[in-house]
Image 1: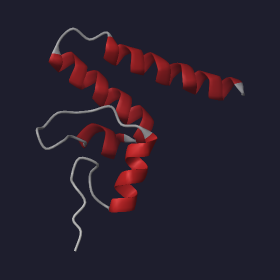
Image 2 (image 1 turned 90 degrees about the horizontal axis):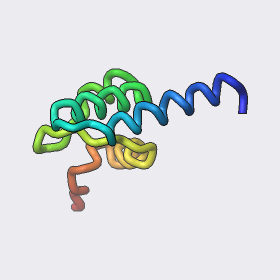
Image 3 (image 1 turned 45 degrees about the vertical axis):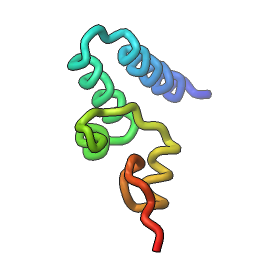
Image 4 (image 1 turned 180 degrees about the vertical axis):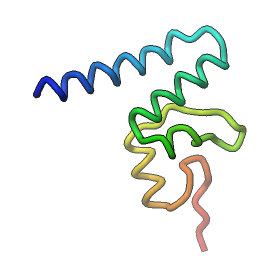
Length: 80
């Protein structure tokens, strides 16, 4: 692992742990948004919410699922 990769991993780890340390729901939603923006880009990270309007930490598997189904991960797949 290069120094740049180690730094990126450390930043991701620090952002993830900041989500776990939040004491209020508002702070947790902001920390989740920051984590998602860092990991998945501004467009997806800042605007991704479930149907109830809450943010959730995104994982690479969620992104793969969204791409495969072409819809958000929370929505059930409609079969014809």
